[in-house]
Length: 383
Image (cartoon, rainbow, N blue to C red; front, top):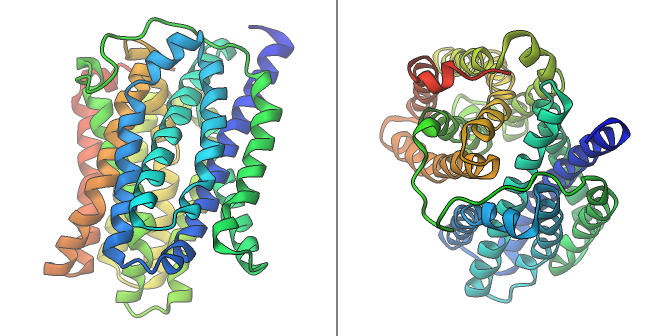
């Protein structure tokens, strides 16, 4: 792939990341009205969200096989995009909790097929491009998330009936998928590793998988607990939103400039320095409980983590038996962090206070730094 075709494939891949993030952002804005529509308790809603995460883990495993069967990462990304579009609309059409659980599990599986395929394709395009571009592609996801959240808020303002809330967002995602995916090209075809499900992590990916587990735990903590932490130190709910806003904004900025940083310093250094920056930010937010220090600390977390996951995905694609298998391994580990993080932090906070809960997140960042320094496979990662 050369010249205009390569350029078109890069921007089509960016658009695909944007579409995925847009759908996620719109879905996040629809969770509260969905809870109200079905009169769900917090526990019942957590079952549906857990089903989505479990579906996501299961959906990652056969994606290498899907890529092989379709003959390339671009084709699998196209299929994943269409499946994601359909699955987006289903949870809000559910008449009861049982159907909702099935719908969110399907949504999680479709998200995973699209996610692993588009990251594997992004790795292929990055290698064809000849220099790091994964961070800028992940910036598309972050920008899409912002846009999707705003679009979802607009739909709520327009008072659309709850069952129809996701239909306009799904239409936007479908339009982007239809416009972008023909320009992806077939992508990279490869032989899938044996076994569609429950493959053990490859030895060379253990360190990377561990790092992404802690990084996803931290990102989940920022989404779920940053606002609550600020309210425990006396801030209003409106002012508490500044913490996650600072985290998200610096993550977008970091990813927009991340390709140049990775090109200059290399992926291994960016992974270690990024995790260390997140650890410093979380330590600041925990040690100095006032809004200025906390918001500044959370901004450092966003800046630090912004390029760690893109670098890990690029590295795992290069080190895995196939790019999709490597990314599936690290993505599955990331989902494990998302699953384990919120209840673990909540349990610590319930017994020892919210500062201790956030301190645990700081420890997770420090462990990620230690892993990046200890594992030879991480130190050996190159551009």
